[in-house]
Length: 622
Ligand code: GLC
Image 1 (cartoon, rainbow, N blue to C red):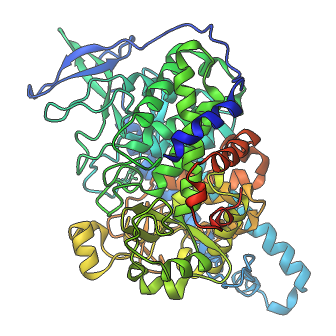
Image 2: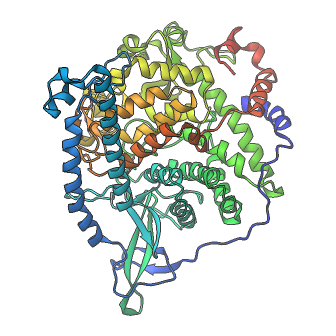
Image 3: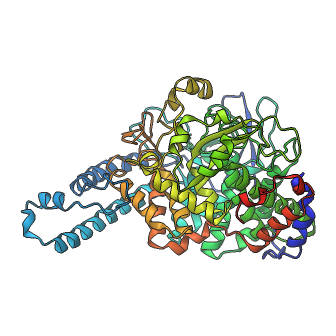
């Protein structure tokens, strides 16, 4: 109802908004061939490249083997270095992120502590720290380059993990869309644009794939979770091979989850590519414009929903196993909002897209209102919920979703700091998921889904709850973990998601880069720098794990892959951005005056406003 009454006001505000693309681009779609899989059970359509490699495996497995042994040598040597200037992992809760390791330094050098004055020690320590850091960064770059996957001789992505110690590869040998984002950003920041451009174009080809599971097809705009470059014998010629792209839209993934986030990330990366390379020809291409529209159409399609948030099944994003996030999980809403903002900037104005742009603008306003108003919790809001009346049948209900105060979990009553707040994980009728989900909160700051005050409050909370959210390894994917019967029921007794492991409260170093962008946006980079420092003391030494376990993030995760690419790339992006904070702009979107205007028009033009609680307008800040 809110969106309906606001649409006119919104469109007035947006009328005449002029996106920058000229609609004179050429149309070009990748070619594909029919290919019958060897097993004979499945007929899929695989993209192939035009050039061929005669009896030559295109996926360089032998090359990886060579790198593996080389890498072990170099990391064990780095490991010694890392230990020798330890102290990074011990941080105090009050925010001292340059840890005094003078004592260790002197011991290593075999000197008496008194031989150096404190200034000398500090200087030498700094130099030592920065050369250690340079060494780790260099190792990260080497590993990132080793993870590159080529297709017909060109780089098109990075493999998810390159772990020689793992007995089962599962799908970690594939290029995941979400995992490639930090890799892509690292390459953009290093002015290596080709791999990102190739990735964008090849994944675009996969979007129009015919995908079915048990005779059912999802929407056309769906992007795959991952893809693999396969080398297959050339049909009709036993002596030749060719490379094909083989995507997975969830039809093979564990749990058969559709990756809702892939298309959203694709749009975000596309904008970042344009902003950082200055090459607007890519976004102007008609096939790219069509790709953006297909993703938008799928996301903006009308359904049964009363909420402007996207309704999804469990595991549609980074958390791709059952974790009780089905419904309207924050991570998807933050990425959705960000993708809408990015698409709005990139869409070419043409007659055919007027309806789409109108729907997009309406959704932006309704979505930000909904999240700012109903997902937000701080001490004051918690107290309001605590005193909620229930079973209110009326248009002006205060407790619109019929939340019973007993739902407030005991941990939260203790945990909520006096200063700070955050967005809850999910909101459904009669249900608030109060868990703190990091990625959704970070990306809400980055995309301006939340207000400036709310953004600062999120960072205040991170600061106040450092010991829980960062501890010995940044950053907890969510807090707290599900335990006991809750774990049994919600995860289905998932042995991979036991308390404080993996998605269930595990610590994921890849989240560092998203924390960094959020901190830079709010001009508080020191928070991210402090977290990077902690990670830097362990990542290379531990061989770049995928995730860490335990409440303090002390152990390398039970089933964690080593040499996980997005751990490596996430670290690099954080370092590069902290060194050049202005470059983070390629990922941020600012709340523009059009949205602010539309937002206030929406409130004043809502005929039901009069029936709302008298002070309802005061609960959010525009
Ligand atoms: C795991 C993670 C997922 C990631 C994939 C590849 O399935 O849950 O987020 O994309 O591994 O690294």
